[in-house]
Image (cartoon, rainbow, N blue to C red):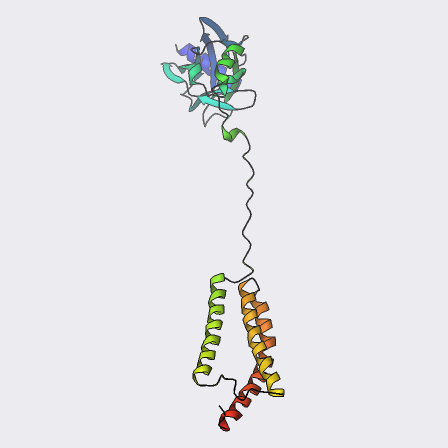
Length: 275
């Protein structure tokens, strides 16, 4: 027994790996195939039924149990999945590994893949030369693929998603309609209130109607007041605040001038007792 352990240690030292694989055996559909660490099975595993199963058995030779042990299946599109075999120590640095793979347990993509490669990975953190070897292939018959193709839905992660086109909302170029409507309504109410006050005090009548230059002053003043109303309505219908301020500034000077002329005329009439 000690002599066998010594031989195992010498083999591992010569090959430069902490582990070696031996006695690889694959069972499926009452058939058996052998494989080793450096030589995969000479024949492919043929699956033709949905209840097919593949059993992998092999022995690991090493000084301690490997920290990483997995069987990897990979299709032609390099999509892969991994399985962890059941590992059992049998003493003298030997471990038996067993894995049973049923067709129903395969990912849906693999159930319509014509060929799957089987890879074996064995290693530990202390091992600078882990085992990563191909040990065989699985082939699915066309009849088996056809049975499962109708049930397959391709996951979105295997393809690019539609491009997201987002149009950002442009900043508003006009004032909020409620604000503009408030100012316009306020202007109309102020003008209406002014007319009512003038009428209540007897300032609006057709006696001593202005004539000559005073008539022109009055007409221009009323026109300027109406122009202010038009400017505020334009502001409501889409003019910017800067356009509104500019127009109001232009109208302000003439309005003060002609307004003072009209008020002087009205004041003279009141002093004369004609109003």
